[in-house]
Length: 430
Ligand SMILES: C[S@@+](CC[C@H](N)C(=O)[O-])C[C@H]1O[C@@H](n2cnc3c(N)ncnc32)[C@H](O)[C@@H]1O
Image (cartoon, rainbow, N blue to C red; front, side):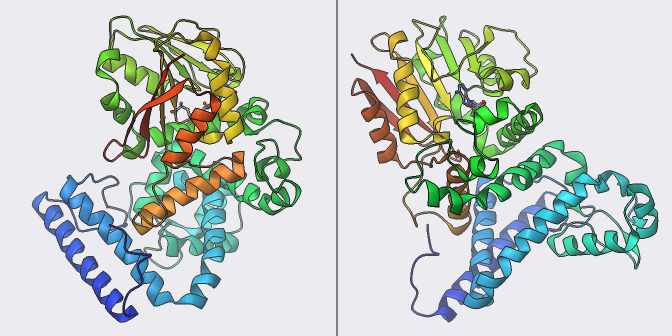
């Protein structure tokens, strides 16, 4: 239930209400952790990195995040709220980048609580001890490293995550190298292209001097960034909200075997296709993507699964397929491009062919909890910066599909529980 946009009688009563949620949810989490023999909530060096809660406790955890976010904002007040976050974001990102670029997580001992002295660490990473100390202390209020005693620095749980999960490095790199500089290009992009409907004229493309028809074509010429991007896509699959299981559980019962032919367009490294092939061994799957993306994919063929380079703006070479899948692909494209992509495979469709779009559907504005709304709007804003596209709401999806060709009939829309991606099933009805 959304609360953050609802005007309340008084801020005091709102704050008291939020404080009550904080208190009740904290108690719920505490009780569960005690029952399970888990230590209390902490970001200290010994905290377990991943705790999965059962649904009723997870609900409490989400409520705690939302209530404490809003309570903190209320207490911060309007002026400070507008002054502080920009600087905080800059610090957090720049410090994170420094930590990765100088490989600090692997130079600070992982096994001892003592940590390492700034002097010894400075020698290892070839940076002056004073500036090293200055930068790492800037990260400490954001839970990155701590000082177990004066002059020494040691891991927290979040820097242990940085040491053990390479995908976090890709994610940080994407944010620092791509999203932040490109967001700065937004104003120039809109001054030159106020309609914001061309993927060649985005903040991303202006920040790189233009010359390519969009981010993906740019990536084709920059293999290191393709690898990083594929890493980030992989990181998303590990997030339960983007897990391939949601697609598997939504998969139509009558298309699970018997030689059903499936083309997965923009299928990237095939993580999702392999998960589908494991779940439904009778499927015959072709994964298509741009050549550079497939090269980054360390393709492992097997089962009834093969990879094929194909640009989905060109006519679809695999004919007579039962089902075409766009999983988390079309939100990257403005309306006119989505329509071009859909029209490009009309010549290969037969009556009754299904097209499954498994993608983000934006809920109505203000209908989400504060943390979810922030996440959704972050993704949406990122789409604008990178692609001049958007996260469509359900009516916008239907409209863009119908305007591609009236013979595409949206048969079903489903919202799997706990999934960030939703299911749109389209039938070709010539
Ligand atoms: C957001 S990723 C989604 C990948 C994958 N379907 C998934 O669910 O994780 C979008 C994919 O579309 C691919 N793509 C972009 N432009 C393409 C094009 N013109 N033809 C084919 N694939 C393209 C990208 O290389 C990338 O792998």
